Image 1 (tube, rainbow, N blue to C red):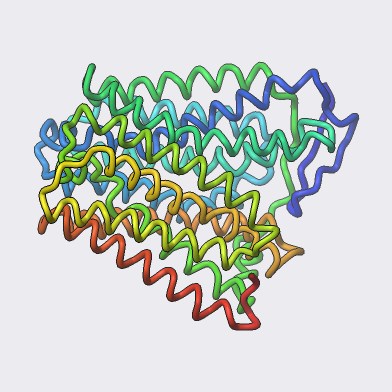
Image 2 (cartoon, helix red, strand yellow):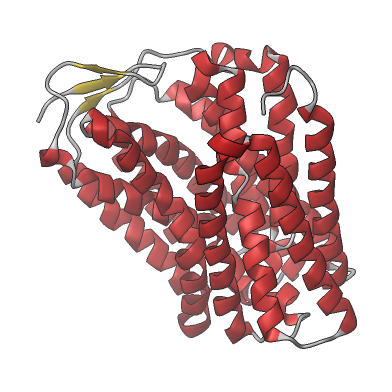
Length: 406
């Protein structure tokens, strides 16, 4: 197998032939890795009450396990990109998956909530080391005409995890207990580590780019105007998500119904992501985002109205879950489009910063959700819908500035 080095600009400098069909088996393995990461990030939502009861904390407190994971990912992603730049890619990716597996085993065996939080930070560090590099490596494993397809396959692992991994994890938590569900994620991560170590060719590391240089792009007014929207929009999307079980109980669903409801959220997420990717080039990022925030706000407000009224309309809940998922996950393609247009020469850096902003928003939203969970689900839904409206207002205010790209 040939060697390929990946430069900091995102271009490949081949030291041999560009890999072809002999290494294509590595791309599905990397996608399975991102599926494991995506499942691990949010699987806790499916069994939060059981976890809270077992570890002797409130449901609102237990939800901070998601906050801690997201915050650690956001903070560690640029730091780890700098510290691990020179490592060979296979060693880095396999090591990250082994770390993810070990961290999830620690979570599954955690005797106290404090130990669980420490293990979630370790899992986030492993995820932050794996996900960005998996996408970059996939793009360079294949011939140029197949690179976009390979990247879509790997990134698609995260979206599929939202649609399938989290609901299945929730079912596993109900059937076998939350510890076994986290153990299954650990087993998947270790299995993928073995596959990547066998299938991935040697890929040398990159020159080290100082963290200060990575963050220098934030001096651009357009980038500074666009990134806060990612944080605000994802906070709106995830204020309720970690508390899905009690929030959905407020609209008449049992714990057993949560899996199909989250599955419908995932269907909406996939559809929203695909639709946004297809129409952003034609309509522009601002229009796509505006529609997305309206759809998200409507879905969350509708669920809040059902919770407040005490009405039991499962079909309507399903429709609103699809709307919530679609509005949440339609954000990433247009935001990346706007950021790349704002800093075309630094696309890899702004995409990485957007990833950190996504997890910052997820952590902030989960924190807000924990604070509003005590007054009740109606307040949680209303707060999330209000944040979606705030994101729409921020978008419309900043979109007219010359510093912001559509």
